[in-house]
Image (cartoon, rainbow, N blue to C red; front, side, top):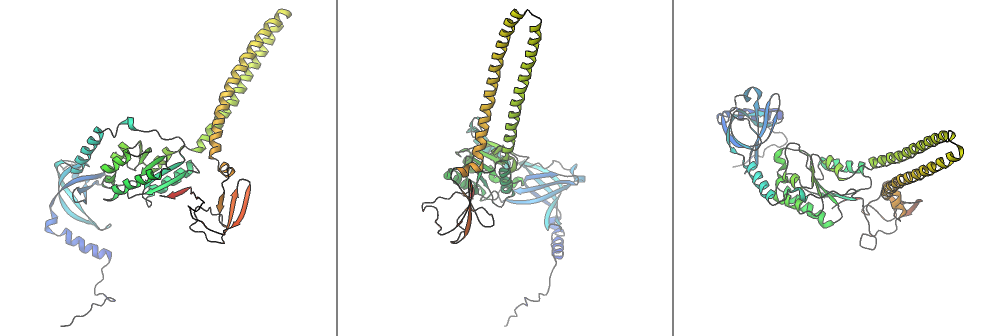
Length: 424
């Protein structure tokens, strides 16, 4: 008996995407078992639109989800309205949505089936952790007003990481940002997040930790309700800001964090002040000080003119004595008041000037540091891409120096290298 190899270059039948989808649609929608089927599960998310109610039915144990839809004309006929966290029994028909190549359950009826398993587990864990005091407001720590190093626990591929970088760079130039990468979705996410938090603590440089991810469906946020993640946040040695990116529900990570907000950008805004706003406030206070001095001086001049007019109406000798005493008293009051206000304003101005000076990149250069650039102007942050013979430009506090690399020595050979932003 001989076998003929199939001709791989010229397949007998080639289906288009639409043809294959139509074939699958025919199989599913004409199956008698699927024309009227009862399904039970837990509603994990729901969204109301004019056309109807769209929601996801999830099997908590199998981690399997089914998309469902109830058209607007059918909503009033339901015994109950599907609500996230509730266990329901649905009657409907399987239909195929060709535009996305997905199948979904078109629901005709919904019946109650008791409390959802995931919602029950969430509430039990929350009650237990709350009884331990992990959510107590007294445990919340204040954020440092001017942190110099911030760690971020998120996925490097997530949009949240880019949002945080841009916000921190705009609000606080020169800040060191450390990324401790982690999975923020899926079964392996809790262990990954716990490991990322532990890396930040072991490193020891960060003063604040931001735990973040972008938005997503409720089932995608399950890792932030995991007990290990909650305890890792509670035991973290530095303040934690949670910016998990969901508006509807609070996760357990939100409740245990020192501060929580709804977006990654808001977390970055909360972590550092805006230096531009600080400088504007400094200028405003300086203008107020000048205005107050001018106002006080004008008032004193008016009082002096008033006393001069009174002096002309009194006998000269008595007039001189009285006005001399009054002027001396007013002068002493004026000097004391102006000196007191001026000293307060100058002291505050000096504090602000010291803060601004400590953040000035030129001050760093004056302390003996230098910025190394390639010939194209790119700032050099690591020796990984250097080769002997490369030409570099060193920017010092009073000028630039062109140098050539003669020898490359890694960290630990007596020359320490430090980057403004690195991945742990």
